[in-house]
Each structure stands twice: as C-alpha cells, then as structure tokens.
Amino acid sequence: MKKVQIIIVSLIILLVGFSAFIFFSGDKEKRIPSPSSLFKEAREKLENNELLEAKDLYRKVLEESENIEQLREIQDKIETINVDILFSPRKDECTTIYEVKPNDALFKIARKFNTTVNLIKRANNLTSDIIRPGQELKINNCKFSIVVDKSQNILFLKRGDELFKTYRVSTGKNNNTPTGTFKIINKLENPTWYKTGAVIPPGSPENILGSRWMGFDTSGYGIHGTTEPQDLGKQITLGCIRMRNDEVEELYDIVPVGTEVTIVD
Image 1 (cartoon, helix red, strand yellow):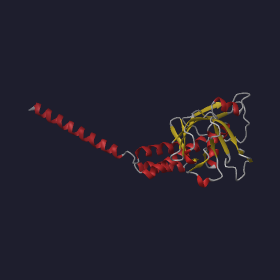
Image 2 (cartoon, helix red, strand yellow):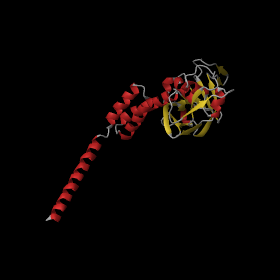
Image 3 (tube, one colour):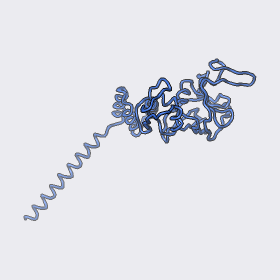
Image 4 (cartoon, one colour):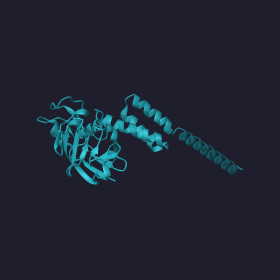
C-alpha cells in the first residue's frame, strides 16, 4: 500500500511539473513581439533620435514581416538611418576613434584609413580642415563597394556585406554601359564637360555631368550627376551612370578613390 502511495505522489509531481512547463512555455511564446509591435517600437526610437536602437528593431522586423510593402518601407528607413549615423559622431560597428598626432592632416588620415576627407569632416561636424593634436576623430573603418544593376537601373552601395543604401540611376541607351568590375580612379567636384567641339563649364544647364564626377579605370566611363533628373530610371545615357545631384554628392563624400564598382546586366 505504501509503495502504491509513493507511485501516486510521484505521478502527481510529474503532472504538476509538466503543466507548469506548458503554461510558462506558452506564456513565453505570447511574449515574443509581433512585427507590428516591433515596427511601432522602432518608429518611437527613431522619433527619439535613438538611431542605433531603431536600426536594430527595423532589422528584426525585416526578419519577421511578410508584408512586402512594409519591407520596402523598412529597408528605406534602415538606409536613411545608415547615412544619418555615418554622417554623425555616433559610433557603430565600423567606427575607429583616432587621436590626431602632431603634423597630421585630414588628407593623411583619410589615406591611412582608406576613406575620404569629406566623410571625416561630416562625421565629426568639422567646418574646416583644421585639426589639432590630441583631438579625437570618428573614422569609418569598413570598406565600401558599389554594384550597378542595369536591368533595374539601381545602384547598390555596400559596406562590407551589408546593403547600405540604394539609388535610382540612369544607364546607357542600347545597353551600352559596360559590364564587369572597375575601380574609381579619379573624382572631381563641379566637373567641366569636354564634349566633341565644345567645352561646357560647371553649372551650365548643358553640362550633363552635374555636380560630381567619379571616373572608372576604363576610359570615358564613370558615375556623375545630371541636369535631367526626370530621366532617372531609364537607359538613356551615353554609357555613364547618372544620379541625382544631391545623391551623387552624398556618394562622392562616402567612397574613396580605389572603390570597386561592379556593373551587371
């Protein structure tokens, strides 16, 4: 009789334990945030200018959400946050804090870290090239690269393996933008356009290069601005890649000479 009582008590303990396990497991599942609640929390973080936290939450929504329209909106928000963080003193996983040494100059620091002077200035709210020994500077230490998809007329800016920003562009008519992998070998602000039989100065409405030029290591091709933003998204150029002026200026400040550009059909 005593043995039977022990068995019954043991069974009761097992059943209570199992019931508690089911209850708390179910409660845990209920506590997993839904994509809509994550989206709301991310938006609140963004409104409070908590950019890093907002970005992490938006990334989680991307992983969980099945709403195609919402996914595009979220990706746009992440890309905007990416640039806002890059152009601010906020630190992220690609940040190095560099202490200025005697006889340093911004162009030397930019060359040392394979970045641009303009990016260093924008990330540190510098209004001039003057720096002083002991000053701490935020420096981007991750490598940027560019992929241009001619079929979509989209330029993808990548930082490492991360899709950092997308831009709508125009490419060559009759599919004459070359495909392959190239490097940016020169950069010009407010470029002059040397066309057959004429020299078109910067700022002229006839200067199709717009406000920036980034030339490839294949003669005559590059990325530049435009005086015809209404034609972006079309295959209409002489072979180069056109961007909106404000966007090509942004890209110009981010990518250094030597940046790899891959163009695909």
